[in-house]
Image (tube, rainbow, N blue to C red):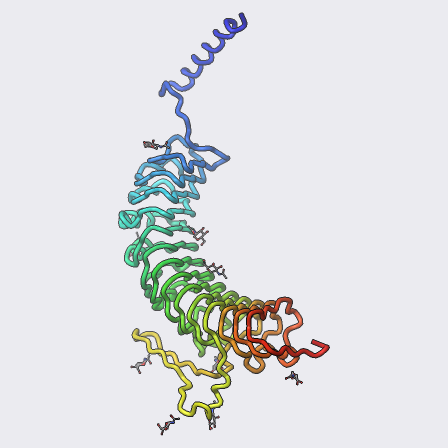
Length: 396
Ligand SMILES: *[C@@H]1O[C@H](CO)[C@@H](O)[C@H](O)[C@H]1NC(C)=O
Ligand SMILES: *[C@@H]1O[C@H](CO)[C@@H](O)[C@H](O)[C@H]1NC(C)=O
Ligand SMILES: *[C@@H]1O[C@H](CO)[C@@H](O)[C@H](O)[C@H]1NC(C)=O
Ligand SMILES: *[C@@H]1O[C@H](CO)[C@@H](O)[C@H](O)[C@H]1NC(C)=O
Ligand SMILES: *[C@@H]1O[C@H](CO)[C@@H](O)[C@H](O)[C@H]1NC(C)=O
Ligand SMILES: *[C@@H]1O[C@H](CO)[C@@H](O)[C@H](O)[C@H]1NC(C)=O
Ligand SMILES: *[C@@H]1O[C@H](CO)[C@@H](O)[C@H](O)[C@H]1NC(C)=O
Ligand SMILES: *[C@@H]1O[C@H](CO)[C@@H](O)[C@H](O)[C@H]1NC(C)=O
Ligand SMILES: *[C@@H]1O[C@H](CO)[C@@H](O)[C@H](O)[C@H]1NC(C)=O
């Protein structure tokens, strides 16, 4: 029978296995999938870092497991490790010598864990990473003091995600050591105050403050910032510092879903291209500048700053020059506001405008000839207004 003929060969193979793995009689199954120098061990119900990965490992993916503590010896064997991801474990702490053998680590993802419990020891571990560039600490229930502790001395950090934590107020010490910071995500916290918080981060280019409790952004003077997202707050005033002659690098400003009554007071000189202002209560008030109607109405607002080192801000209302530099605007989203008319010359100040979204406002008339829209306009949405007259001559 052919079956009998095979038996000796199988026995022989089993014997060879024993010879090849003398230490353990059961060859261990590696829970990780190896692809070049990456070990993929996501979602494997692991409660510790699996051993016996190749020594030259560069990336370790351990998301969706049950690792509670990252032990001092767990990464010792991987000196080339560059990326480590431990999101969605129940991680409470990293022991302070966790990274003693992995000095090349640049990307560390610790999102969605319980680091609030062991943040102090974890902060000692993070300090030992001289090349750390990207750190994700989102969804860890961290408060202001815990975050300040965790970020101490992280001078090489460029990308930081703190979204979904319990931060309430920032001051000039919050990100003090992060000189190289380029991108910061603070969305979905409970922040109501940002006192000089970014003064030590001159390279910051992208800042996300969406879904917080901010009431105003006055004295805005972050000239290097390219994208600012402050949507979904309670912002009543956005006022840029008026005495700066610098060109702001700002290209995208998202202030949608706030409480603005006035068009934001933008920087005098900027490259602003995308301005999102939907779902506020913005209106223009040029008609009030005719003060015979309201002889005693105020024309300035003062913002007093409790901190000695930042000046008071005075804003001149009704002054149309305060719209700032809108000459590079390509997208202006004003959906869901209270705009009744455009101030004189406002549209002409935007010669490269391509989209103007005005639906759900209070426009009553629109004279396209008078406004002189840019030649590059290809979307003009004026649905759901109170329009009873739209005028345009043949050329328009
Ligand atoms: C996960 O591991 C625990 C023990 O570490 C075990 O009790 C449980 O059955 C495992 N779950 C699955 C889905 O393997
Ligand atoms: C952290 O920075 C402080 C100064 O901000 C310095 O005194 C301390 O030695 C630094 N610690 C480490 C571990 O680099
Ligand atoms: C955190 O922000 C970075 C970009 O700054 C992003 O790549 C990452 O997906 C974010 N993490 C979470 C959990 O949102
Ligand atoms: C601002 O953040 C909100 C919330 O994350 C997001 O929906 C929106 O797209 C962002 N805005 C821009 C301009 O990216
Ligand atoms: C910026 O514009 C405001 C309002 O027009 C003006 O008062 C201020 O002097 C300008 N600042 C600079 C530096 O040009
Ligand atoms: C307010 O009224 C006075 C006198 O009627 C006039 O001189 C002044 O220009 C008005 N101010 C504005 C901003 O129109
Ligand atoms: C404006 O103020 C003056 C002086 O305070 C007062 O006499 C006058 O009645 C006020 N006018 C209106 C319309 O309130
Ligand atoms: C801001 O205004 C308050 C109230 O008038 C004043 O006491 C304070 O000195 C001002 N601060 C600055 C920096 O000018
Ligand atoms: C529309 O504007 C043009 C150019 O300013 C003007 O000549 C025309 O009379 C205006 N039409 C109406 C109905 O106001």
